[in-house]
Image (cartoon, rainbow, N blue to C red; front, side, top):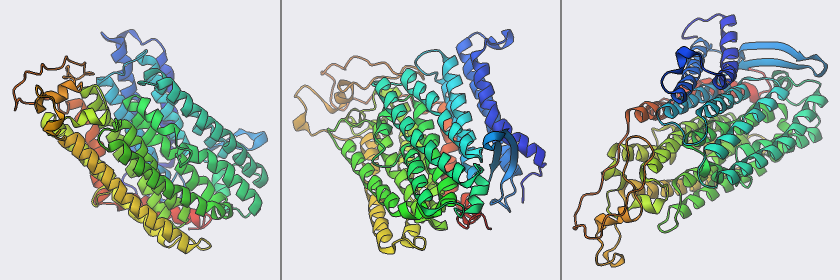
Length: 568
């Protein structure tokens, strides 16, 4: 069944357009604008160009989804297969199925929302031309990663996103941005070198780099020792990008330093490339190697779940000077641990849960980083102690709609039933209860118990964040000086007043002569452009939570076929 009957040739064009258009748009962004398109503000014109290109890609992705045959999601559709390097049998092979289509749509949506947000709130830093071009190159590389079906093309697309993200952090980031950018690029490049060796090993030993042919062969053309080496090499590169504990340490620094849209794209899109590689390449191509390493992958995953949650609890406690963006970054380590646990079960239930959790994390954490950026703009800081204030009002009293949306995103992140975050975690734990044949059931049930404990820790730190940032906290009078009233504390802590819709600038502290009971200064609440950017993410979080079949109906047949060695 298709929503709209679209011919195969048009479907091929749409997929090729989705991959290539952002790259062409990046080149156009660096060229001088035609006289009629310059407008009064050239910077705004190039940002508008970014909105136009990403909007066109999103429309094409939606058209591709409407023309997709939902009755056969396990079949590769909109395929293009052209010889590129005959000597190595490398082909420009594109196609989508029920596994890659949701990730393609998520990437197109998040990039468009980031471009729209940047148009109304231009990034503070160098030329918007370079910023727009880098975002478009990043989008092209990410979309290509989810669309290509050749191992070497996958590697090229996988690496294509590194340089744009490096410059987005290094040039438009905040404090410690250069150190964070270097840490990001070094970790990911070192992992990629090892991954390339594993991909070459598979291609040369099997005689093909075609991912569909390799999945159909299901590892029968590779010895167990070759599969084990390939999984170890490729898995390290994918684990760095995911990121898996203990290869995660680049992530908190990168998120803390990155601009708002950089954090959204990093969490919402780039982290998914690593887990997608596990599902698309390692599970079907090297099943014996994956079976060997699955218990270790699951162990690292549950350690990451607990570690990420404990790190968030440490940052959230009073007096820890925790950063809200850094806390959300550590929460990603825990959430991606659930994705890796689902993959490690090697069962349809677990892998479907992993893919669902991937999409849910992109929607919810993307929204959280948008909100954290907005809070930082208004207060001039993301320090949790400052955001908590001492009046008991905080966001609920100063910007109630912003506070309510932050609370919504937080409870979605902790896995509240009825929202998107619930289904991925639940299916992952169910998959761990009964792992694939050949895997230790007692070990995986232990991992399931640890993962379930991690959900409790997640709920604990998210509720602490909501209480402190949204509701605030009262400072005991014994801790206040005689001349200080509760109403004075936010201003003395450095909370700035808003200036329009742009970044806030700090105002001098209120004199200590303010009377008790003085009202807390209000902040700018959600602006129109912010509502337009954030509403789709909130709506999709509710939709996928109430109607999980919209995703599972796409992924399940494709996962069943993938795990069965290409047999429906």
